[in-house]
Length: 78
Image (tube, rainbow, N blue to C red; front, side, top):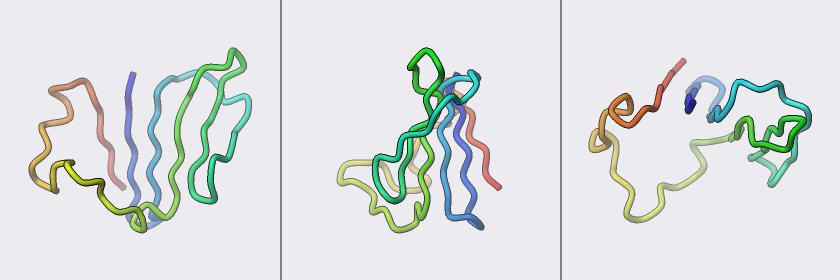
């Protein structure tokens, strides 16, 4: 299950990989943290201040991405 939530108001992005309960959170930088289940699997990635991140070279620009549902991704914006 891959589920992506984006909030422009909060300037945040959360990528869900699992519906498991979060056991612990590991900060990997000031703006990015990993939520980990008790069994050690990755539950999700939280990205704060997402508008400050530049788009890596080679990624499609807005409007050029494939339909997320066609690749099994659910995109939710708030």
